Length: 98
Image (cartoon, rainbow, N blue to C red):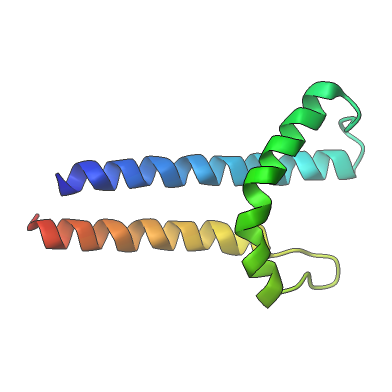
């Protein structure tokens, strides 16, 4: 049971990490004019990923603002998600007796 819950947590964290990475890469591509943000598909993907990622980044950005134009909050979010996954899995597995 604990291993199944740990697997589910891992899959959810993987999905969140993927969305964050897609958001970061798309924002870079738009910033460097590699893709056109006025394209309907690109604009939709940007809007959806931004709506999912911004609420997770906001608390981090309140504590650590961008440094010289470099926003470290996505990196901190990815590290925090990995840390959360490992802690939750260890707690679940240890409490379930595995």
